Image (cartoon, rainbow, N blue to C red; front, side):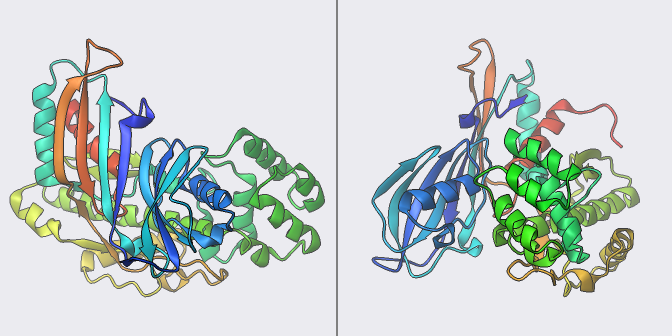
Length: 398
């Protein structure tokens, strides 16, 4: 199966429930973006409206390689329609306040898979039936970990360790997957010239947040904490969330792996951000019932692990990471925080529909079109992987 061959192969439509009203201090826009990140859409929408980015809020983040319909709130009033490079926006109402992540009810997905294996129609139908019945582990997928640098780790962990210089080194010197060529070239230089702030400021791409950091460091060469807080708060929150999500995956994965071992159930291992995580194909009905409502806490300084087995695994993970729960508070940051609460262990797509059609790119082949709804924060790419794993049916399950 081929995935994301075209932008229209991945369409996501955000669904919100917000305090709508006939008139109010905030305008609500439905934004359609194509081939750009939500951060880019945010900056471009604000610029087109003549506003600062802080006056525009996108409560959710959506894939770059996709067509995404999502919502943004804007301080004040704006035109009925707006368009720019990679996005368009339509005014749909007014709000009493800015949008919040909690306003998102979920996301509808329409996903197209191409180059289907021949003679697999029955396997596809069976695989989709199993995903609908048994669900899948509710892991965070690789899109969550764009700030993870193999060999360097997570900026979020450096922040929790109160290592502001270490966090800045990764941010300034290590290329991220979404970085443009100019950023990658600069970061290679930055790794060699760390501490020579005046030279790095001259070489830094413009416009970029890096320039404000380096301008500050040129005048305050060792005040790494204040420099770190010059990174946009939403980015800092994402860095924290990436590490927290990776730990959640580790905890959920080990918990499931222990259950599978005790019950002698077969599973497949899937690698996400260098962590091997168990993926099941089916579950006994009694175990499915037991896990259906199971939730896994996020690591946080006030987290409580009521399940004794989960508490033991969490303790092992903390020891491996060299941290304690009390460390899970971003004490060196002013405006970025770790998420609290918990997340369902399993994910069950809703409103699931599918169909096989002729592939317009290769008329002799078929394409599979999937439509489903997921709660906020869950990953459609994992649903695709769950189906693909079942269709492929590996000979060896570990």
